[in-house]
Image 1 (cartoon, helix red, strand yellow):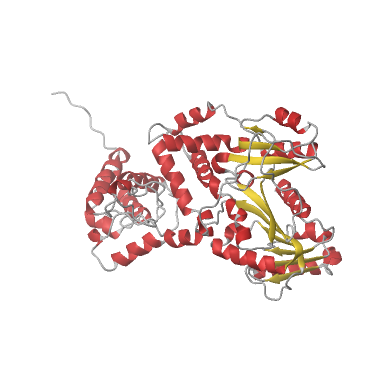
Image 2 (cartoon, helix red, strand yellow; image 1 turned 90 degrees about the horizontal axis):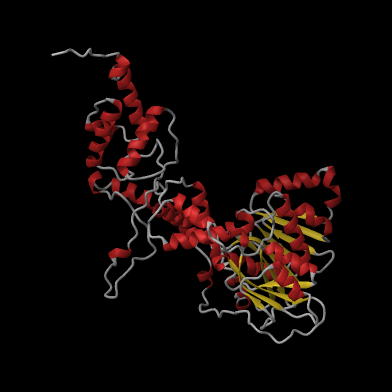
Length: 519
């Protein structure tokens, strides 16, 4: 955490050329950045939507330990899109660090950016940190589910779990190309820098996120040249260093460099796409280990740029797609770039709708409880046997060329409990544990809890008879069918079974033993 925080402060301060800038932080939270940046600022205003957080910060600023900051720091309870009372054109640096992912949608982000541009002074900078990369969402979800899977888990089930994790994500993820398109919306933007996070630790906060610097009115550094001197499809640090040391200095381009931190995650995503339900997770892991492509870590490239007096510029278009990057080392010292042998690709934007570069977390949140609400609504109006056993939420239906529904492309119902309205509860004793295993097997679902309702999970009278048969075999308890309609959760039915076992213990506990007689 300290490493990430120090890196964020360094990037934020280096983005603004003024030695004592006026700073506005939107979403200041508990003040992790405030104390480290306010000491170097002429003025610092922090806003946050939480009155609890702001009240705590005000108490801390009033304490003797922070007396030296009182004259330059103010905090205010204000939502991100609310710029009332904030003077237009006043701030040299506007910070949104690790807050963008909590915005409801991309339109809300645009409204915040519009306000941020309005309060920026001429030549001001807007810094957005810890932005989640939409282009790496598939790799991230696959990696998380692989870490949670057992060796016996099938590839098909792993693929399904990863897809469900993507669909359930309620945070905002953005394609880096979204920021490259912003000058169309905000003409004051003159320079956009998108950089992957490069801290040493390999985790989600470092490997699947990036930082953005938006500079207004005037460019603050070298621009990406249209042609680069050299392109390395598979570079090595030594080869890059040798090329950067040549004189006169010239731009050196890297094309589709694999990020070494997520090389295994990229390979996993490729294998999940290629393998159609065959094999197990154990086999998948062995195949990933056999992969030979290693790639380079972004930190290595940043170090090479510093050591050779170059500025490293990352192409925001397709930044991270397939775990790969395009970047150019631009000389920081005077010198004419030599004639290029390769070109850094600049893919044109085909759509003006910025929503194509983001997911829709608000829709995900609404859809998450839709199946449960539909089941409750239908359960109040229809006999239980007419309520659908499963619900699958789709944004649209797959169609054939003739306009009819393409049944082959309809997704199968989930094997997970994501559409159940109750919170998950673990089994508390052996009876609940054994009964829960029976329910999961009969219903064909995973991850059930002891408070989940049998019929809300898609159970019906035919499956109920199977459950009672399995209970008879496992517990030697004979329950009537109506009991499952009365006790519809594992917790309730397990209590009923425990009561029956106390009154009528199983044969081995009663000590019933019959001597074999010869005939």
